[in-house]
Amino acid sequence: MQTPVSIAIYYILININCILNYFQRIVIKSKFILLYNLNFSYIWFSNEELENKEKIIRKIKELDDNFFEGGNNNSDYLVNFRSLANGIFQAEGHIGGYFYNYDNFNFRPIVTIRLTCNLETLKFFVLLNRQLNKGMRYSVEEIPSGKFFVKLLSTNWDFIINVFIPYFNKVYGDKHRGLKRLENIYILKHKLSRNKKKEEFEINKDEEILLKEKIIILAYNLVDNSQRKLSISELYSLCHIKPLLGLDSICIEENREEMDKYFLLGFILGDGNIYVRIREYKGFLWFIPMIRLSQKITDSNFELFINIKEMLARNSINANIFQVKHLFVLSISEIKEIEKLSKWLPDDSEFWFWKGKEYIILKKALLLMMLKAKYWQRSKEIVLNLVYKLSLNYEKPINYWQNIIKNHYDKNLDDKYYISLHQDKSWAVKLPIKIKPKVKFFFFKTYNSKEKALKEAKQYRDIKLNTWLKDNKLID
Image 1 (cartoon, rainbow, N blue to C red):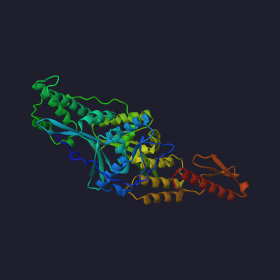
Image 2: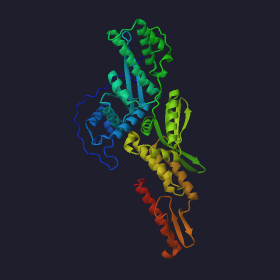
Image 3: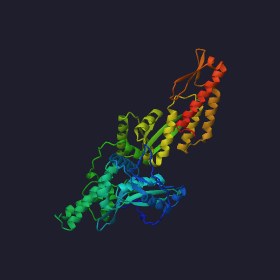
Image 4: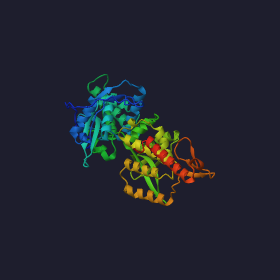
């Protein structure tokens, strides 16, 4: 079997002796002290530092050189980071291999994780590779769009069997079976090599052919149809094997271990899409936040999504599964469901790595969406601005929606919103935010007139709403 073109490239080895000036600062926050467990000293950087392969490799080395062991060797952190990494591998990992010498029946395994290049993905890779005893190599590739992808990869049998597979034992479906197939290939190859060396036992020619056929079946099933360069019959022919077994003769049981929220977060980091749908309805607009996961259509992936849906249901979060063309999609939508999900998932923004900005923006938008504030024009304008920071892939420009908001409130909004007349003696201000007192009264007698009391009530309303926005970092 041959490896896909994207995998069969020579590996860029990190062997750069370069001294960079940097500012060191220990990041200490009351909530996130040494959050990464093994943390980085603070490094100033700019986008220009990641504009070509050479600079990306230098940045990886710089991050690795400025990595230090903190005092928080918390076992819970290590367990959670591992689950997160398993989720990312579930989404963005690849398991493969190829025969590089058919006569000697030599097979080379490949395991990789591939991510779009940015500072946060590089941080994740450096953190992960240190957890894996620096057993993986880095590869950088540029695609026609000009973007760069970074891969962690290994072709070393001993590392894959003794370090990589035990670390990624929380993956499911195709990924789980792929790793188990590599493990079985290794065991069968070991039996063949021991037989050649006449160690401990000997097997006859028929038994040797059977072992080789099992290896071919396992290798053939490591990758899906779209990535196979040779048919199973061509592999048999090249390896001089006359088949006796069927393709389904080697069964591997599914991983039944219960997944957790850190695995799901890793899956979201890898294959998740966080956005807000904007819907126009009766001259106004509605915001519908969504988190979607997609995987190609296989029985294994459908079972994976069913397991995720059941895990979410156990935590009172509703999700839907449907099919779009060649993909299964798991979708969590509606404000209340996303709000419950955001409370259940890990709240440490640094754990969100390259989706940390999206997570913070989504939480800010949710804060306003959850308010019963249909009369508060500014809240809708701020949500709209946040939504367009979250994604730039909207068909309509932002001013299209801004005009809808303005026209709606110009026609329907009385300037006395959140202010009502109370017993013809005062104005009562009741705001949609949590504040004390819940209701603030402005008595006509106190201000010597109904008009002056209304003016004070409006000023109070505007100041309190504006202060709430600033306190929640929704405006500067």
